[in-house]
Image 1 (tube, helix red, strand yellow):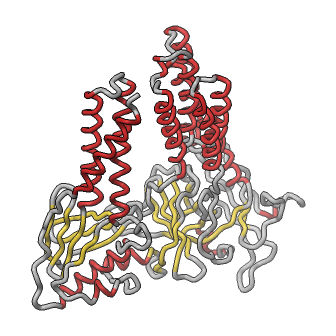
Image 2: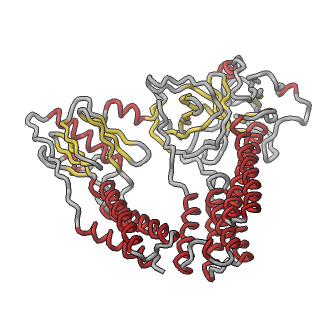
Image 3: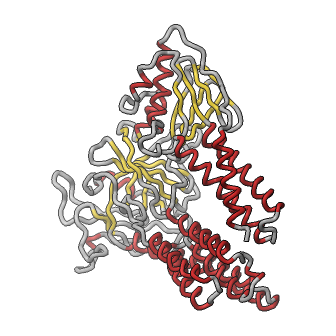
Length: 564
């Protein structure tokens, strides 16, 4: 089984390097001196560039350190006075954006009500108590003591269970030594008392600190290189390396503190279902309604997995320690083995839950290609057999993407030619025009030209390179992922259809669920229809004049901006 939590999600962190790029473009356009080596105050300008680039790198390593570095950048530009005029004030906006990104709410709220915290029964506790001593990475299995202020109604009295035998039962603790949570409260029913943090931590936690030390050493080496060669460009590289090293060390220290809090304080315990993979646990925590579940992934320090990649996904019962919310840390015990996290919880979603199989309901539905009636549009279901349905990215979104890609490539090429000393010359115009043409063509093929056509006779996909036409078959399957795409396996072809969220909201574009429902409904209707029409013809759309206009505007804007 592979991960079906998206590995990549849109992050606010990207705003920081985007702001840095904007500042560079504004400075280059305003002064006409993009290359710091061609002006007076060379060292100051290279140092200013290094201060600007450091937070853009650090934001992906440690947000707090990046916010501090951005504030240092703003102050450094004032003190260095690189000679950029009013543009130097943009670094204060840069610091503000970085601080907002760094201080955004990292800890999310659990999106659905979860069942009350319940104490595991005596039988389940005993099953975990007899676990073999299988340490994950270099982390020993800590002992656990389950305590309660009183047995829940209708349940056995609380028992103490051990995973590795290095903790004392609650009855053996001296008076006043009962475990307490971070707020100083004694644990109530369903709370987990953990012993102090283990003596050692996963290798991956120490690796971040070692990487930071290496980066700082590299910064020192670059400073020495700068002093020997008298080339100020090394100053910028040293500042970036020093920032990355400081961020890596801060990241390592923060994660060690988080692990100590996780294993050294009271944590909530809940029953969960997990798929155990190598270095990754896919977790489902059933909600209070029993029909939905909180779904997320946890990266762990495992070097062994119980999951069979070739088989169907199998969930196992587990105990989850911690809060299943974005930014929180959770430890999980599966089959008596403690899984130590190496990352906080990432994206948390709510999915329909199949309690009989312990899986998201969509997996069972996908196997049978069931149609969700709530997502099926009337015009898709009630159309005649020969009616051709079309899906493509919303034209407004597509053309905005074309313009953005075209302008970005043109500006990038113009900036490169400006630094090379060919600004405004015909070679520069030719390079900018060629780069923009390639980018606009790519955007046209990936955003505007691609479309999916179908009727009860079959399906036609017009893709980036060519077209595919296939009739409906018994083994046709349509599923969607969480990354904005629908995968359609039909005949001998597998087609991936981009389905971003409809924009603007008034757009008639289908959502992922609506497209999957429409395709599955057409497949089922095809089996029940005696006389089927031919699949839609594959007609490749021609490039419109608007595409040439977008290319012309991008080239003209880039040449005019960087001509000085």
